[in-house]
Length: 203
Image (cartoon, rainbow, N blue to C red; front, side, top):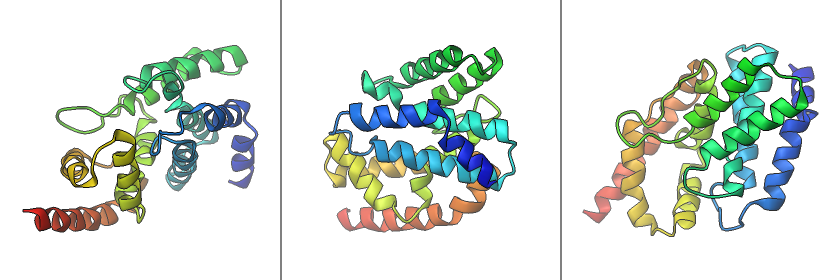
C-alpha cells in the first residue's frame, strides 16, 4: 500500500487543498483547523486500507477528506455544500474524474453534516462510512477530551456546558464502517463512561 500512500501525497487536489486550508482558515477555528483536516485525511486512509478498499476508492476518499471542511474558507454555518461544490469543481477542472466519481465525492462531503434528530450521521453513498468515521474518530480515541475542549473553545462555550451536548451526540452516534467499529467502539464506550462520571460530579 506504500505506493498508494505516495500517490495520495502526490495528488494535487489533496495537497493543494490542505495547503490552502493551512493559509486561509480563520485561526479561531480551533477544532475545524488545518490539523483536523490532516487528521481526517490520515484516519480515512487508515480505515479504508484496513477494510481493503481499492486504490481508486481510496483516492476518492482522500479528495473528500481534503475538501470536507473547505467550506469553512467562506462561512461556518452550512459549510458542507460549499466544500462539496469546491471538490466537484476541482475534480471537473482536472479532467481526470467521471461524473459519477464527482457525484460520489460530493455526497460524501454532504454526509459529514451532523443530523439534528435520529442518527448523528447518515451514509448516503457507498464510501461515506469511512469518511464519517474518520471525521468523528476522536469520539473513540485517546484525544477525546482534548478535541472536545477545542470544539468548546471554537464555539465559545464553557466546557461544562459542552459536555451534555457531547453526551447527546455520542448517544446518537454509531460507527459506519467495519474498520470504525473494530478500531473505535471499545474506546468510545470508555470515553462515554468517563464523560458520564464527569457529568455526575455536577449533579
